[in-house]
Length: 398
Image (cartoon, rainbow, N blue to C red; front, top):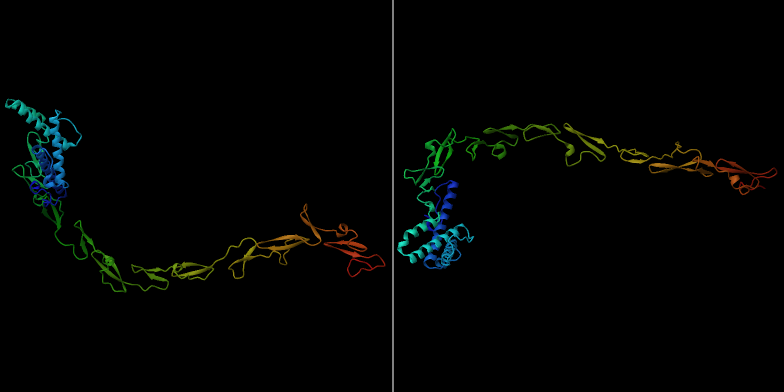
């Protein structure tokens, strides 16, 4: 029917996806052959390739022009004395048209030159040079309604899946799988025949609380999740197979909350937005409650916790009664530590690494006292000879 309508917009003959694809490709192939035959006729009759109605853009014009050009090439090859087997690398279909037009021109020329007495020889040459594609009895579907196969000796027709060949050997009819028993419907399902196939339909509905799925099976409806239950606010919906039930909410004790299933579970107060414990404390969750544990800083050497226990403060190692430095030393406190310095009147001995008394009388002879100089630990004393007394400055005698 595509050759009469010149399009492939006819309704599909079956619901089968495979059959639809075959029908569409078969239609397009017939249209291509029809347009190609028009192009060959233009080349043979008019010796030019003017497209129908002056249309150069449609798909029909493209096929007509292509086959017309290929045929003109074949005729030109014959006129120039070239072989009809000459390959121009122009594609399979164009090559077949080229060869057919070349052979046909050769036959016409031989008839004009040799006369009728050479008819038998020309026919033999034609039979040798004719392309099998042009003599394929299955071209355009052949006599078959669905599938055609040319074995050489005969044309064999066959049908698509879901169809069977009629007694005329060319027509096909739908197989009723529901009658032949070749369907795969399960118990509780009815077989419904379709064109080229069948479908299974459930005998009865799924019933309350269930829904029919795409694979024709029943699936439980979760009324709680879908929100179609009728439980009151003080009840919790619990889904069951084919139905649901409403469970009363429990009155949970302080520190507990009810979950979606109606169970009382512990509240983790430590994870709440508002911190339950004061600064300097860590929240520890317990069953139904929580505790606040005071944070104890880990103070390093030379520091200890303050009276509030909130921070570390420096230890004054020099505070009485502690005497971390030896004799002759002075303790100097520093953050986290202390240092020992020599007192006035002492000097640090690098060998013994101790503070040693300075003998001022020997170091400064005659310069400290007016008469006599006596060394003491860390200092010195001045005294006078008989008949003299020490002045107020503690150094001179009078």
